[in-house]
Length: 64
Image 1 (tube, rainbow, N blue to C red):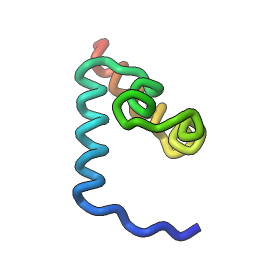
Image 2: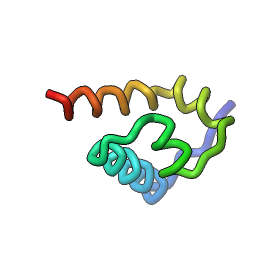
Image 3: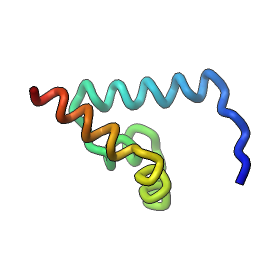
């Protein structure tokens, strides 16, 4: 499936959500459900896209 490239504004919004989640120590689920407003159907595709790795890495770095 070919997807259109997201706008700069869309990518900036995602970056802000990820950054805020990392600063406040939120989980992957908190990021996608509470911050981004997605439902349960978003878990698998966002997990496969690397979302869990990003949130885990941010949590690990904060714990050092």
